[in-house]
Length: 154
Image 1 (cartoon, rainbow, N blue to C red):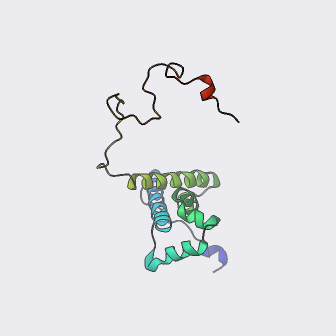
Image 2 (image 1 turned 120 degrees about the vertical axis):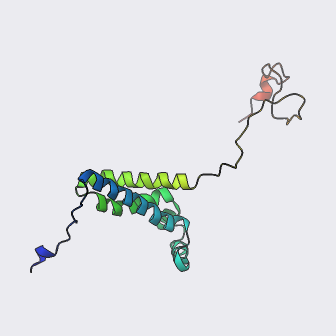
Image 3 (image 1 turned 180 degrees about the vertical axis):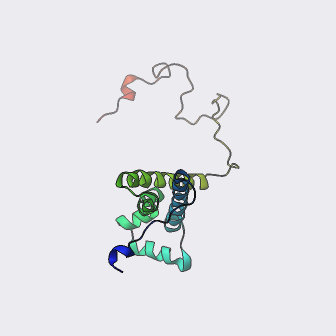
């Protein structure tokens, strides 16, 4: 037995190639989201991730651990090897896996529907004036503000 026989080979999939690559991609996206979420948003088992994040401080690696979108690029780079077998496929898979994990993160952290929406109402003159808002319909000259008052000295 020589070293050539010991190389790692990808197992043959029973399903069609298109379905197999789609399944691998889905697994890679889910795994990327899980690992990235663990590192960026959780303290980890026995607070191991928390201690590592604190040890890294505010430097490059510490900031990377706090940024989900940034960290997902790093994790997805490793997961892309699970999906792609050629360099060009790897680059596309890398970016797509990171994008998929980013979408999952956005969907999972959405505010609940119980938050009331922002409502913009017209300001009426019967309400209290806040001093900064003009209630007159004309320009500044009509409201008693002269040009000299509007121009500030450097």
